[in-house]
Each structure stands twice: as structure tokens, then as C-alpha cells.
Length: 151
Image 1 (tube, rainbow, N blue to C red):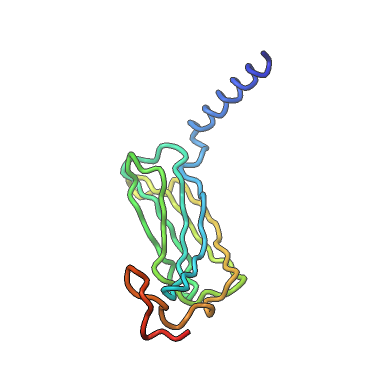
Image 2: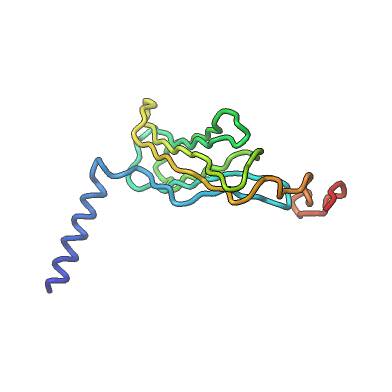
């Protein structure tokens, strides 16, 4: 009986914490750098899961450090009532180095553009971009062999 009472109390505390103003709007649930050998491209991506109700009319933004040294690559998605996950993927990247961390900032903005949450994290690359072929090995939706590619 005590276990049930303790469990019910813990559940109530967790529910209250989820409604607290201190709890995060989103949490990062995944991400990484993907080297697609077939199409000779590398991209970075991150996934943010909704943890509590987001500000109506707001935005979720991901800013990726550019491995080539340019300005950050910024992607923004609007908050919608039914969206539970925000997935961000960069355009193809260049300049990725092995054993290097690349900074990513995820921000939640309210309807006025005010930052209400900020998460700073890093994506790590174990590989160097030089592992990719000079040209895509395949072309088209069926992954047909690229006649111009050399292995």
C-alpha cells in the first residue's frame, strides 16, 4: 500500500514539474553528422522533441556551425498545435574534419521573437570529409550508377 501511495505522489510531482515554468519547451532527442557515400554529400541534423506546450505563434530555430568557416546555417520552423517533433537538416556541408565538435544552438522563440529557451549542444564528427568520393557514385531516385564517377 505504501508503494502505491509513494508512486501516486511521485506521479503527481512529475505532473506538476511538467507544468512548471522552469521545465523546457523542447529537448534535443537526437542528431549527428551523416556522410552519404552514394551521393557524395555530408549533412548535419538535429531533432528537438516538444516537452510542453510551445508559445502560440512561435518558432523553433536551429543554428549549425559551418565547418567551412562561414556564418552559421540557420533553419527555422513555425510552432503548430499538432507538431510534436522538429527535425532540422543542413544543406550539404564542406570542410568537416575528423575528431571535431561542431556547435548547434536550438532556440524557442515566442510570437514576438523573444527567446524563451536556448539549448547549446555539439555534434561530433569521427570522420573527415575526405572519405567521400569526388562525385556521386549514383544518380537519380533509383540510385543508378553514375557514368561519370570513378571509384
